[in-house]
Image (tube, rainbow, N blue to C red):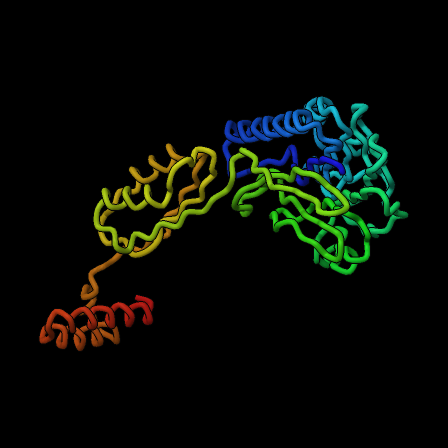
Length: 358
């Protein structure tokens, strides 16, 4: 049995360009705080290994300051830290793994083929390999001792056909590993089993761009030959969320604020929100109060106004041409109709104006 933590795709050093500079710095500091929390868990739980399945750094030419800060945190881990470089932090003569001193507890796999790292328990072997440029093709093949717990740590695109080490179901089925710790795919898609091999991609440790919506985290648990037991641990790095606010039925600012508050919910101070207001604007609503609420509730909010201003449907009735003629016909029927029929006629007028792009 081996107790592990499985991380991937931390992309330390990435810049979220939609954030202002002070928020970017806060975000980066939070990433390091969460990495410190992982180190605490690894030590407190007496883990046997901490696995990083690629893209620890966002770029292979990352600054020395960030590399030094990262390694100083990982140096506190009491168990081996095993890193398989990915397509963003690939291993080459000028990579962060060759330019800087690596703490003694960290082992970086530097070969394109899987190589072994036996743990001190004498019962577990970790296999890993490195991207040596932005693409790779790493066979999931190794000379395994079936009596031991065999774990593979590698960066790879599950089910993909890209050059980022595509990993097929057939490869997983035939590999013979007890657990395959994968990176690259930025969304956690669960812990899965093929044949007798358990595999998982943790998803990104934190959001790396504005499209990566939802919770981020890593995996922690025990790997055995019988039944590996892992659970997803959510990080507290700010996440990305989208909020769509339809104001079509809103007639005043109080209703707008109430609607937004209900959509936002609670405990949102750790969310980067992309809020979009859309629909027909029935009155001269004041979005300033709404924007203030969004700014107060979220770590950061990007506000977009995609509303359409509602107009008087009869305002062009006196015009010459097709539009005016159609409106006069509708208005004649509208004046003779009861309230129910008037509603139907009004909808028909709106559809007609939209069709004519008025």
